[in-house]
Amino acid sequence: MNQRPNRAKFNATQRYAILGAAFGFTFPLIGTVLEVLFSQLPLNLYNMLYTQRTDPLLWIVDTAPIVIGLFAGYAGRKQDILSKVNEQLRNREIELKNNQVNLETYANARTAELVIANQHNEQRTSQFEAIAYTARTISSIQILDQLLPQVTQTISEQFGFYHVGIFLLDNNKEYAILAASNSEGGKKMLERNHRLLIGGIGIVGFVTNTGQPRIALDVELDAAYFNNPDLPDTQSEIALPLRIGTDTFGALDVQSKKKNAFSQEDISILSILADLVGIAIQNARSYQQTHEALSQAEIASRQMSSQQWQQFLTHTPVEGYFFDGVDTKNLKPTDNQRANSLAIPLTLRGTRIGTIKLSTADPKRTWTTDEIDMAEATAERTSIALENARLLQEAQKRAAKERVIGEISAKIGGSSNLESILQTAILELGNTLPGTDIAIQFKKGQETE
Image 1: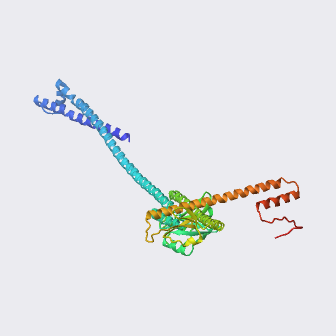
Image 2: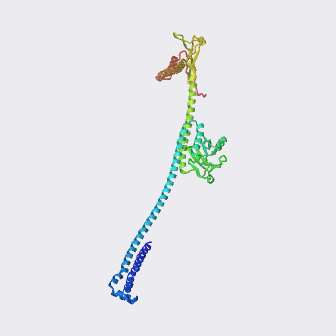
Image 3: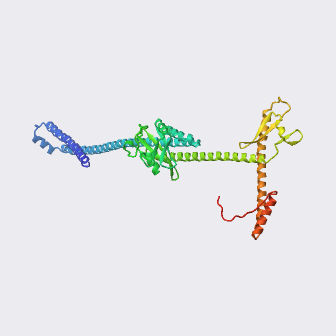
C-alpha cells in the first residue's frame, strides 16, 4: 500500500522533468539552425558545432533544457502532491461512505431492536393489564361455583388461549378433578367428571404432585403430555400450581394451538395470575364456609330464641295487653275476638313472638303508608325491647341462682363432719325449694348405668 503511492509520485516527477528537458532541447537546436542559416553557412553538423562554440548567446539558450526540466519537474511534483491529496480525499470519501453505510446499518439494527423492545413492552403491558382486569373480575365474585367458570373465561379472552382449565384436589388428595373450563372440549370433560391421578400421567398430574410449573412447548415431544381426545388442537401446554403458602390444592391448565406459545416470561406472568386465582379460590371457599357457618348460627339462634320464648310464654300467664284509650290493661282470652283492621307481627330473628293489633271504630278506615311504617317501626323496636327485657330477667334469675348456690356451698363448706354436712345440705335445699321433700341416701357397692 505504501510503495504504490511513492512509485507513482517518482514516475510523475520524472515524467514531467524528462518531457520538460526534451522540450527545452528544441530551443538551442532551433537557435543553432537559425544562426547557421542567418550566417549563410551550409547547414551541417560541423557548422552547427562551430556556431555553438563561437556564439555566447547560444550558450544562454543551451540552458533551456535544464531550466524547463526543473520547472517541469517542479510542476510534476505539484501534480504528485495534488494526486496524493485527491487520493486522500477519495479515501476519506470512501471512508465516510462506509461510515455512513455502517451508521445506517447500525441505526436500522437499533431501530429494529427498539421496535422489538417496544412490541415486547406493549405485550408485557397488555399482559399486566389483562392480569389487572382478571384480578378485578374475580375479586368481585365470592361464590365458588360462579368464580371458577368466570376465571377460565376471562383468562381465555384476555390472553387468547383456546383452553383454560382449573383442577382442584379431592379431599383425600388422590385425584385432580376438573372444576371449570371455557372450551367446548373442556365442557365435555366436565360432564364426564374428568379427573387425573396426582403424580400420574399428564402435565397436571406432575404439577399437582410436585407443586412446580410444567411447560410443554411441543406436546409431541413431551413425555409427560396426556393426549386428550377432547382437545385435539393442543400444540403447547403450561400448567401452574394453585397454592396457598406451600399447600398445593389445584392447578391452572392453559393450552394453545401454537407451538412454542409460552416463554420464560409467560411462566412468570402466568405464575402471578395463578397466585391471584389461588387467593380468589381460597377467599371464595372461606366466604362460603363463613356464610354456611353464619347461616347455621342464625338457624340455631332462631331455634334457641323460639324455644326460649316458648318457655317464657309458657311460664307467663298474661295473654297480652291492650290500651282502651285511657289505661293499659291485661288482655283476656275473650279479648282475642276484638275486631281489628291492622295487625303487625312482632318478629325477632325470624321468630314471631307476638302481634300488635290496631283496632278502629270505623271499619272503612284506610291506613296510610306513614301510619303503617310507624306501626312497623314500633313493632321492630318493641321486639328488641322485649328480647332485652327477657334476657335481663333470665340474667337476674341466673345471678340469683348462682348467689343461692354460693351461699349453700359456703355453709356446707363450713361444716366439719359428715352428719353436719348432710343436715346443712338438706336444710338449705329445703329453704330454697319450699314444699319439697328432700332425702339423701347412700348405697352399698357400686352401680353402673
